Length: 234
Image (cartoon, rainbow, N blue to C red; front, side):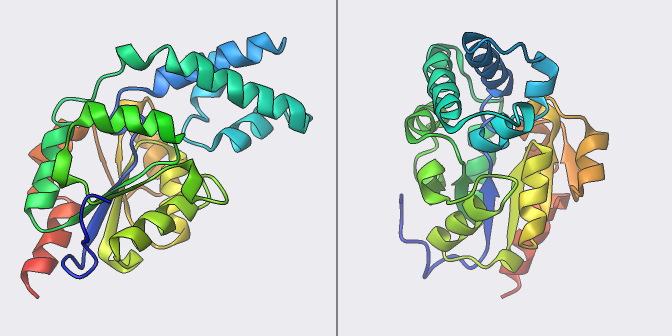
């Protein structure tokens, strides 16, 4: 953890990483598509993309219900290997770093509530280069069950020392919205991961913006801005 924030910051904002801060959703879809093809499975790319943001185990189960444990491990391994070839291509969305800094500077604890593999998360954190703006982060090692289960969010909140009622979660997938709802954390959704505003609102997103820059431009009037205002009133 970048800092001991538990005794300092009572309110916090959690961020999903892939598709929310890093432009990687379609690369994940491509990596899964190639992994399935290696196993002789012809899965439509659109069906895969709709499930990006789920944990890998649930993504596989939803697309290949009769998948054996051995095949699932092979698929996850192949996905990881293919996705790593895209690392040099990955980029943060415009203003992603500035958004994290703005939240931190306003007195919020900032957590990366990611269920990515630890090595993939290390790459994303390096790309974000957000330094002390990030107080805590999670990887797949921190959750027993993957999204849409809320385990990752719970783990990140615990690291920050923030209660669900004092937090907002920013994500890009329907599965992020469902994970937040499971523990009563409102979700601000971004469409830059490729999921439409209508789908995100239907899933229960409280607010929807185009991307980190769009959210940053409206930060004061967003749910995050209201959370900051609550803190200033303490």
